[in-house]
Length: 108
Image (tube, rainbow, N blue to C red):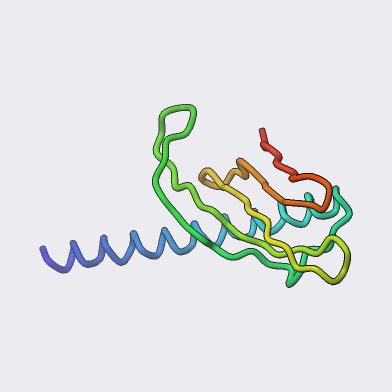
């Protein structure tokens, strides 16, 4: 019985890890697209997980909400932080402070 419980715990951890890697890849593509749209440079070509929590989708099902951080440069010298909120594997909010205004996109 203990072995079955331990196996379920390990399987849950593996699922969470693979799910987070997939969400990270989707967030990286979303960051590349928004940086291209606003003609800024995505630095390091990657995103980093900042926080994770459980939430509900509009349909009522439970999902993992993750916040990813990415670095970009608007002038080639200054490094700035952007944030992507993912609801499950769906980008939900992208926030990037620019020199003249802050860009906040809600992804539908």
